[in-house]
Amino acid sequence: MWWFQQGLSFLPSALVIWTAAAFIFSYITAITLHHVDPALPYISDTGTVAPEKCLFGAMLNFAAVLCVATIYVRYKQVHALSPEGKCVLRLNRAGLVLGLLSCLGLSLVANFQKTTFFTVHICGAVLTFGMGSLYMFVQTVLSYQMQPKIHGKQIFWVRLLLVIWCAVSAFSMLTCSSLLYSGSFGTDIVQKLHWNPQDKGYVLHMITTAAEWSMSFSFFGFFLTYVRDFQKISLRVETSLHGLTLYDTVPCPINNERTHLLSRDF
Image 1 (cartoon, one colour):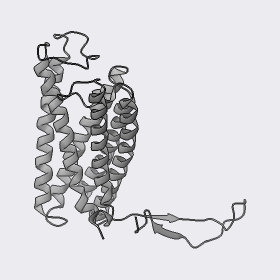
Image 2 (cartoon, rainbow, N blue to C red; image 1 turned 135 degrees about the vertical axis):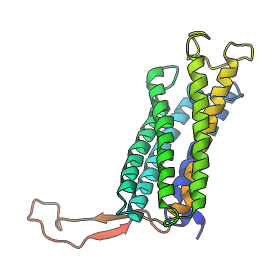
Image 3 (cartoon, rainbow, N blue to C red; image 1 turned 180 degrees about the vertical axis):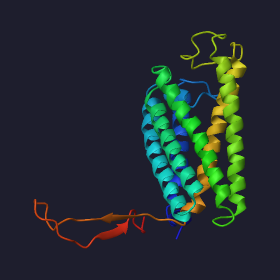
Image 4 (cartoon, one colour; image 1 turned 135 degrees about the horizontal axis):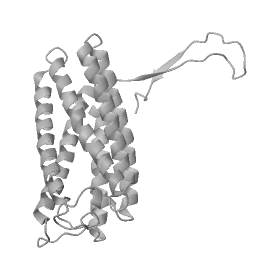
């Protein structure tokens, strides 16, 4: 059995691979068609102009679905491992809400381009990166509280380093983007897809885009830490019938069917 066939470990793997592929394919298409500059464009800039925006939107929408599934499985796993820890359960529920809000933001970023719906796009970006960062922090706290009884200390330290990486990137991006969009460097920055080293605010722009890519990589790394955990969990779906037909009859007890949510031969 391959490693990705164990439990549900394919979920975080597929999430990272698919999302990375969305970024790469959109970037290559945008560069080939000269829609953006090769040197560190904003991630969303690579999905602003057709045809790459169609690819970017479709792939990120599916990535959001994979992210919802991954976050839900993680929620169920922590809940099953710590059924009596009140603090853990509260943090786990908070993590679920934060994660789902981040997924919603990812879908908004995918479907509302920066140059067309700037306010909605920024709201989506704030949800994606802001709620996603808080989700990572909550899961790291959970990892701390679950070690060493549930898992070793190593995974906690790995996740803590990834959260610190994410926080440094987020601080850099927030600081530089606030200065860049303050109005001191012109009002057409929102629509600007091509930058020259001589342009005002070029350095701030490069730091902001580098921090955005760096923050995305920290997200990738964090979800990859779920792979080993997800090898030890599977979900089942239970079919409960209230009768042998679909006519309006008096309900009668029927043997329920319990099957794996996904086939073992996947």
